[in-house]
Length: 313
Image 1 (cartoon, rainbow, N blue to C red):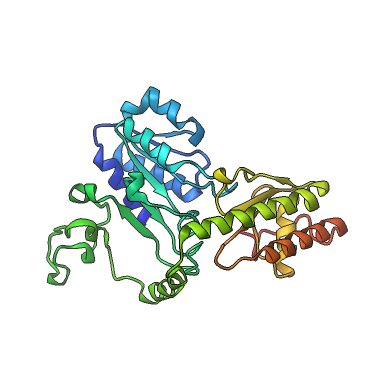
Image 2 (image 1 turned 45 degrees about the vertical axis):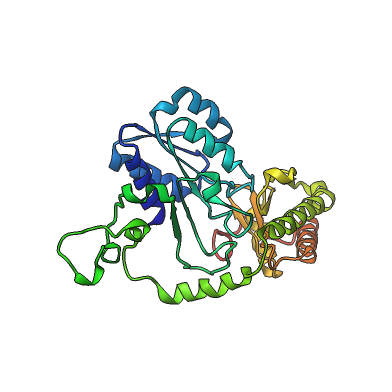
């Protein structure tokens, strides 16, 4: 819902331009909603890999209304330069929308300083709010007065308890509210966020890089002889807070790891993803995961073709 609101609102800010640009490897929801907003706004979707975006904007930027990307590739963990790409979008006169689901809580993000126009994210990944935690929406203050929301709700009304017949948007970001908030889920998220009280996100990022770098070394020494390859960039400046390995039996191995108390996940057809929450994950945890993965592979103690059920997501 927040992503649909953000995409639609961003497109409405540049009604004179016909293109919505997004990543061809974006998370499926992002891709589906980009298509839905394009149909609603009579736009054309262009799918451009992040590495090719500056060159594309040089040629076609004058036709682009909004660019929608994520700073971290959800499959590989590759980290993109959100500042540089946002500047390239602005140089083309377009607006930048970022999906922060795999970045918020894992690395420092000053979206105001970066000049981001709109952003969305979730509370259940590195913010640790648990399944069902509400999503969030950010809109730069400079866009508040012009913000049009595609889903006007009673709590986004300027006077919600008047229960007026006609919609009058509340001032600023408050107009993005739709209905009664899920209080229990918000309380769970609030409790999770207290773990960040007094925490320097630069230190969180430093530990994350130490952890992911360590796991990449474990993979190189323990797992590469067994047919695993690392997909996540070794360069610290180019990786988020996860490590992704490639193996043809990814699904079976992830299911077998779960039976040993190691929770990872997979992305079809052959990617094993290991998320690293620096507030809670230790180097010992990652070594344990690597050793279990090595032993399972050596002994073939897993089903190479398990059904796509259970913890495999």
